[in-house]
Length: 326
Image 1 (cartoon, rainbow, N blue to C red):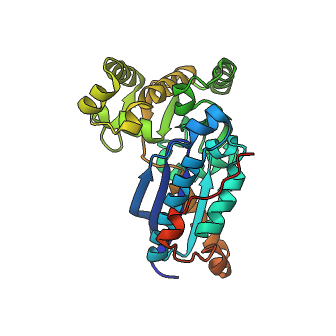
Image 2 (cartoon, rainbow, N blue to C red):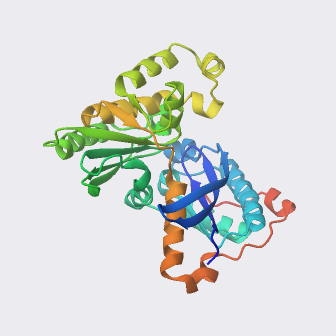
C-alpha cells in the first residue's frame, strides 16, 4: 500500500453540498488525514424538502450540475475510493431517491441516503479529534440544516445517540415542531442525569463560524455565555449589515442565529458550560470509514472506487433533467 492513500467524500446536506478530497497515511501516532481540497456549494435542498416535501426541478438540476462538476474533479484526483451520502433534506423529500437515480445515470456517482443514526456513526469516526478526556462525559452536538445529531460519550464509549428533526433551515422556515424541542429537552436531561460534569463538542458550519467570531484558538473552548453574547450581537443587525460587519456569506448570515439557538439550548439542557470545536464533519468521518474498509478488505479496492465514473461532458450536465415530483 502507498504511504499516502487518496479518498473522496461527498456530503449532501440540507444547506450545502460538500466535496472533500483527502490523503490518509498510517503514522506512528495513528491515522493522519490530510485535506487536499474542500469545496462547498450552498444549494439549500432543505428549503424545498421541508416546505414542499419535495426537491424542486430547479434545485435538483443545480444538484446534478454540482455533482457532475465533482465527478470531473474526482476523476482528475483518482482516489482509490469514493463515498457520497445525503442526509435530512433528501430523507424528507419524497422524490429524493428519484433524484439520486438521475444523478447516478448522468454522473456515475452513487448516492446513499442515510438516516440519523448512520449519520451519527460517521461523525463518531472523528472521536479521536473530539474526545478531550476519556474519563469525562462528553456531549457531541452536530447541527445541520434539517436535523441535529446528539451523542453522549462516557469513558470514551457511546452511551446514547439520537437524531432530532430540528435544524437551521427548519427553524428559518418555522418548520421545527414544539414536540421535537420537548423531546430533545427531556432526552438530554435524562441522559446527562448523574454525570457530575459534561463537556460539549460542536460540529457543523455554524458552530465553526461562531467559534471564529469568538476568536477561539485551536484546542481551546468557547463558553455558552460567549455564544449567547455573539448570538445577541448578530441579532442586532439585519441580514445585509450582518454580512458586512461579521464577514458572513449570504447562506451563513441567515442560518447562524438559528444555529446558535440550537447549540445554546442543547448545551443548557445537557448542562454544558463550554464547547470544544474540532472543525471535523460528516465527510471527515466518511473518509475514515473508507480507509478502514480498505485496510480490512484490500481486494475490494477496485469495487470501492465505484461507480467507475466516466468523464462528464459539459453539455450533458447543462441538460435539464426530467425530474418526477411524485
